[in-house]
Length: 94
Image (cartoon, rainbow, N blue to C red; front, side):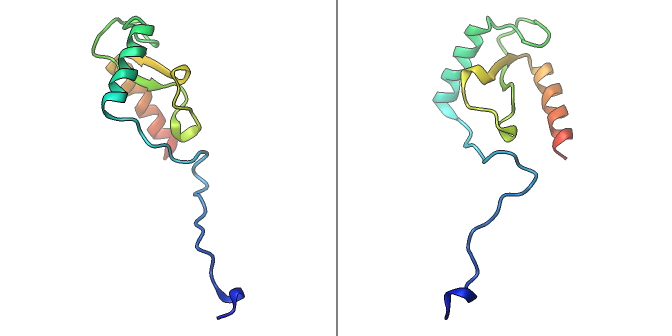
């Protein structure tokens, strides 16, 4: 079969995405990151200022929008602020 009749096997990225998918960090590495960010931010939510040990680490710029997996792009949020931010981001995605 001539090469000109072969279809390419390359898939194009969806136009909805601005960055390549990033593998999520899990397990012990994620726990070390969480502890480090929690200490750096002194257990205080970066949005409301509430101090809690039950907060969550959040990406300032989401990974799907090109945010990096770095401490500079991470912040400590209380669960309520994290949920509010995540809900807003999910609405913007759809």
